[in-house]
Length: 466
Image 1 (tube, rainbow, N blue to C red):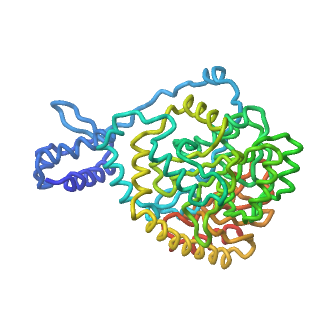
Image 2 (image 1 turned 180 degrees about the horizontal axis):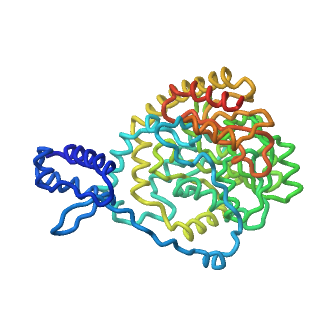
Image 3 (image 1 turned 90 degrees about the vertical axis):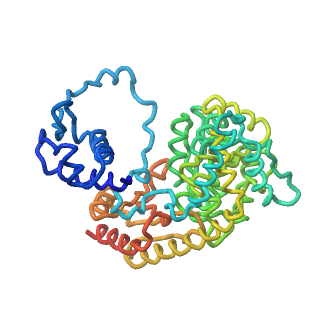
């Protein structure tokens, strides 16, 4: 019999068990074999599955019975309070990470759904990598040379004329950009030292800064990026030597800096002898514009550049590239070696395999078209069903729409009310490193079931009004 027969028998027995009282005896294996027209092996496989799930228990020589609820002794973990002490900081836990049930329309998550990923290419790449030497060898701590070269070539292709393009020796491979941000904040800033951040900004960067013990100083940033004058003032007043920013399709606002804004910010950074930590997480998600990294405008080591492949290739491929020059590179590499040693060679090989396939660019063009349709559908739904809301700018790329609600909105109540009606949303408070400047929602248009976006936003509007 096939595995499907075993699964069918398991499902039928599970229904029988649900209706039976604890301790009830199941029919004998011989009886089940006869009634289901299955082999003894297939029946035993189904019973083994139910036993493993804790639904039944076998008593040798007696039979098989529905499991009885076991009384568990409550454990006392109060001793850990004194052993752990007070936490140095309470790290943020974003609503965007919570798992929603399959029947909920998820506008809260930060990852693209499966249909927007090159899943066939990823599976094939992982299979090929598992058959290679990378499956049984340790890769260099700075990363596989070919992948480092790919990251360097990608940035070199758009580097301004007259500047020295990066090479593989300027690249370190990271186990995802989140780990890279922690390394950057530790190695370039240091505990109790000031770090400037756009506000609002990526909540994970806020958490990484808190974990590194740096002092976060918010710099207001809107649909077109931060004001260079405000950045200059903040650098002067705080003495900070680093500024974390997302110049391309920022999370959560979707902002993309203009070339003139980018040049103005770089002038301020250079004047203060500071670093700009550029998080290019959405590089592969351009819709109506083309990404233009600030790192392509600098070869003097002021811009430290991070580009992740996790969202565009697969959440299972936690690989990113970091480009830095000079002594900063050595300090960053030393911190990485101390904390993560190296990134899995299989993941690096699989990532390189995918992004160098002829179909990769074709896939990205398809993603651009799909994201455009999804974004426009969500924008129209907000305009129709949330008349009291405000969208400052429709993003030219990325995955998110940043929606401002009336100032008197009770965000926690709104989130609960929407979820009770099958819609998961993310409140904007998570993206502010200091006090929020208003009530916002970050709505993700790359999640599953885009056809449900209009009805989901209608639910948000009704809960907001109620």
